[in-house]
Amino acid sequence: MILAFDGRTGASGDMLLGALLAAGADPAVLDPVEAHLDVLYDIGTATRCGIEATDVTVRRTDSGGEDDSGNHGSEHHEHDRESGHDPHGHHEGEDSEGHEHDPHGCRGGEDSGGHDHAEGAGPHRTFTEVVEVVESLGLPADIETDALATFELLGEAEASVHGTDLTGTAFHEVGADDAIADVVGAALLLADLDPDRVVTTPLAAGGGTVEMSHGVYPVPAPAVVELAERADWSLRSGPVETELLTPTGAAILAHAAEGVESLPSLRVMSSGYGAGDRSFEQHPNVLRALTGTATGSLRREPVTVLETHLDDATPEALGGLQETLAEAGALDVTVLPTTMKKSRPGHLVKVVVEPGHAQRVARRLAEETGTLGVREHGSGHRFVADREQQQVTLDIHGRSVAVTVKIARIDEEIYDISAEFDDALAVSRRTDLPVRAVLRRAERACRESLGDGPA
Image 1: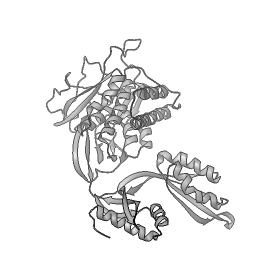
Image 2: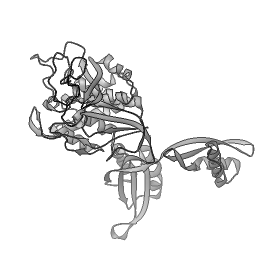
Image 3: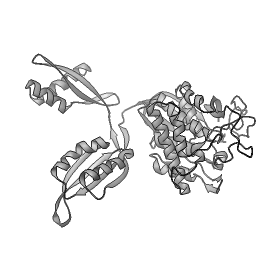
Image 4: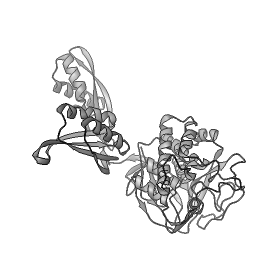
């Protein structure tokens, strides 16, 4: 299943929560956050330019959250209060039930009063403290990993802007209870939908300027720009003169989504909208999410390429790279003969790897070969088909043997079936049947089991 976001009016943490719920995620998966933090996910509906959207507000459930001056969350970034999307769900122009006073939702909102919103409230923590809070929630390991990866992106972006390091800076955006509720909530809802692939169209940043504690800055805000540098998706300006893409929304999508120029061809299964805070005259302030199955396209995965030249590596070291680099996370390893300085024979080693594993693989490559440098050719993509493995059982000379077979599909149509050579070789040695014959029998048995007929 593919989950696709339409980012033409940007994204915030609350908009992502609303869009995921509207697309079919179960709100009950948010219970661990409410059980451990003093927050409540207030889920309702709102109308934006005639479109009904799921509206999520993170509210405080205690009476705390005040600083010494009695102000709620006064240290929170100013641009989060002034932006077109309140990243933590203030409902401007809505009553306590989350319904629009404007039946069409196409006028500017007014400040709502009397609600204990969680925006910037609660303790502001360092990244290390945030890790401790997330680890205390008792989340499944994969969800905890995703949430912490998002916080790391957000923290690194803020640290880069302020010229500090990740662990040494108190991050308001990272540390507030509402940011934790947004990021962890999004990880829980994404895991509940369990898509095979998450994509987003170019994200609208908005325009104009945004007021922050350090002054007035052009949109997109500095942290959003830093996150965009680390993301696979692209930014675009407009369509209104206010901030549309918040740091929390950008961080969640930087970790979870790959960029596409337009919505992919989908056989749509579900769709929905997450409501932004404000209403605009001509543009529905919503984030649309669609789920569905691909119709004929190969899946695009982010990769990067590492390479180094070697003129003194032993054959044994080169021969072992396929195994040692794969253990470190390499997707593919190629060793090519080449000519180097002073006409010396040498080798070019090229390694395809996921961007998140690049540093680990590069270090392993240096350790295994003694190279003094590894080049990286930046993030790109590879196009891959949907694939699965199936084990078939063969009867050879009265012996029952198993062979694994790989099945490749595009748009649910099988276009290749290949038996695993290592399995076929092992069967060949046990039965004295040629490897080619074992391969043919395994592939034929797989086709017949799938109703594809003999090859």
